[in-house]
Image (cartoon, rainbow, N blue to C red; front, side, top):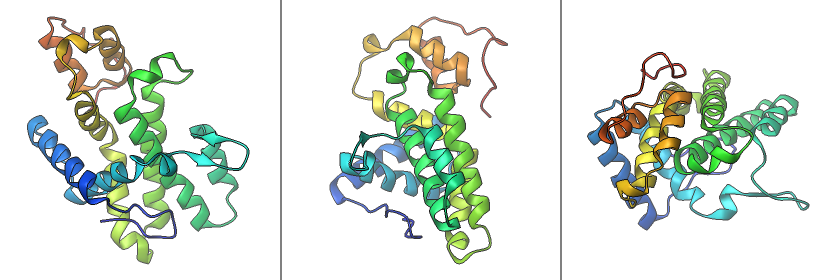
Length: 210
């Protein structure tokens, strides 16, 4: 399912879509997690679109790149119409999921880390699901955004595994993995640490993921 509700469309590109669909389905099955199929399909389409840099990055005539999430959140508050506000909320959720899922390691040197992206993205999807609830668009998409808000951290784990699938265990930065576990409580990060002989100490992590 793709969201055509007045926002920039999430549209499939056949070759990449099949790859992302198969990859996500395989990881969900391997991790034995419960994710609504419609929400998983939304993420497949999201990845397909963001694989094209012109869809991920924004060009306002003066700057080209990713607008910080905090500024996008301010844009949503200042939006002239509910439709524009909802488009910005969708953009926040989409960008936060993509970045925290595929580029979590790159955030270690930034002012904000993966836990910030998870919080911002999950809250944006949650707000969006409430904003559109009861509308024609909401009948189709509110449950999807609600699921993505509730399972945001789960989908980040799924995308992390896809991102790292081409790397060997020797390429894994265990210090960074421990940092991610400490900040987010990622079950996948904990499993990686345990497989490498590191036992995380309970009570030293951020809020756990259920």
